[in-house]
Amino acid sequence: MNYYFAKKLDMDFDQAIERVTEALKQEGFGIISTIDVQATLKQKIGVEFRPYRILGACNPNLAYEALSVEDKVGTMLPCNVVVQAWDKGSTEVAAIDPLASMQAIANPKLEATAKDVRAKLQKVVESL
Image 1 (cartoon, helix red, strand yellow):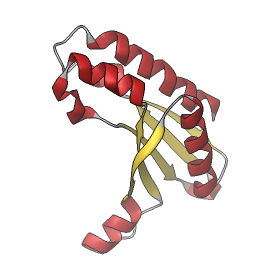
Image 2 (spheres, rainbow, N blue to C red):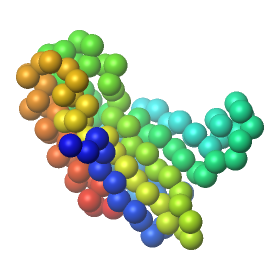
Image 3 (cartoon, rainbow, N blue to C red):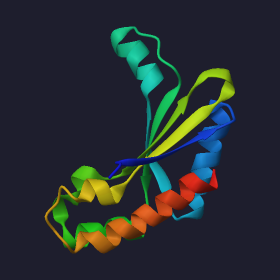
Image 4 (cartoon, helix red, strand yellow):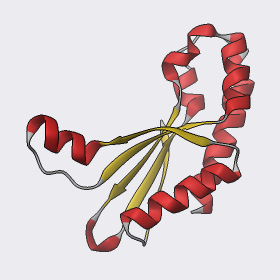
C-alpha cells in the first residue's frame, strides 16, 4: 500500500497552494499549520531548496471521531499535504493516505474514520 496520493499540476507553486487550499475546504478541511520547508532550510542550515510547503489539513469532525476512539491518534494529526515546485512551472501535490498510517495503530475502530478521511483526501487530489 502506498502511503500517499499524488498528482502533478501544470501551474506555478502559488497557484497550486491556492487551489489545494480551496479543494481541501470543499471537503471540510482547514489548514491549521503551514511549514515553509524552503525558508526553514535556508534559515537553519543555509541551503537552497525548491519551493516546498507542508500544509497541516484538519477536518474537525473526522479528527473528533478519531480522537474519540483513540486518544493518542493526535500524534498522527493533522493530515499532511505537500505542495512542491518542479521544473518548468509544474507542481506536485501529495497527501498522506490515512488508511496506510492508521495501520500502525492496533485499533479496528479507527478504520472507518480513516476510510472517510482517505476518500476525502483522494477526492481533493483528484479534483486538482
